[in-house]
Image (cartoon, rainbow, N blue to C red):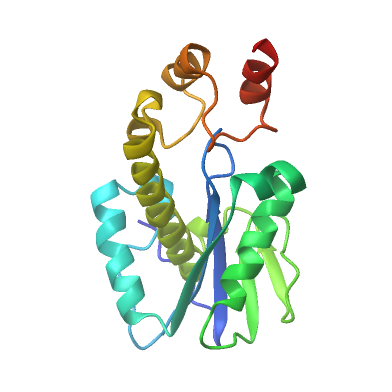
Length: 196
């Protein structure tokens, strides 16, 4: 596993989970790590098992200087578009921090509107420890939300694909139509709705 960089100062790492799915909110997290309390094993959440992510999420919440998780709803995704809804969720996460960061680093190529300097880092969740931590928190929170939605709408199999457009999910959409938690602005859902 790569040794991730821990920038000096109160730098908050920002990342999101759930840009690609057809259902559910997009979730973002902001994390300011404590260099005096390092967390071994941080990495891009997609490269970790669910069990490892859950264990690391507990350590992040315990050891970070500050952390916050926020989201943008399905309605916001449909009215703003997924990019702007993601940036909104990221901004909300940073505003939710109990400690004000001196700067921010975000995974990707776009920065949310913040009142502190922000740097976009391509594949930052595999390079910067605080972004990796944010990716883990965002993913574990979103997965938990999708499991709760699965209990409400079991026919879609959210517990298996977390809302991503798998073959099984697209078949369930064709069979049952869109649920209230499906993103109407996304192609496969819009197509299904146009057939009704």
